[in-house]
Length: 94
Image (cartoon, rainbow, N blue to C red):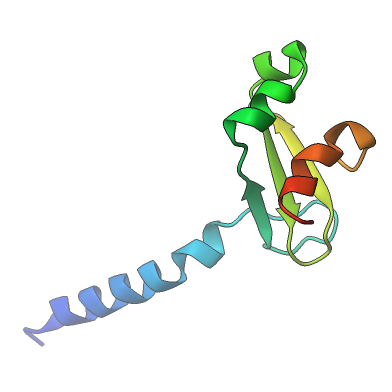
C-alpha cells in the first residue's frame, strides 16, 4: 500500500491524454464536441470591417456537422453562415 502515488501518477497521465477531447467546445447545432477554431492571418483580419475588428471576433467550424460560428468577445456563439463571413471560411477550404 506504500505505492499509492503510482496510482495517482497513472490517473494523471490518463487525464492528460483525454483532456483535449474533453475541453473542446460543444457545437450549438449538433451538440458534439467537434468545434475547432479558424485562424485568421493578417490579410484576413485587415479585410474585416472596422467595427468587426474592434469587436474581437473569433470564428469556429464544427467538424461533425460543418456549421460555421462566430463569437464576439465572450458572448454566446452566433451563426456565421452568411455571405459576409464567407471569405474567412473560404481560405480554409471549407
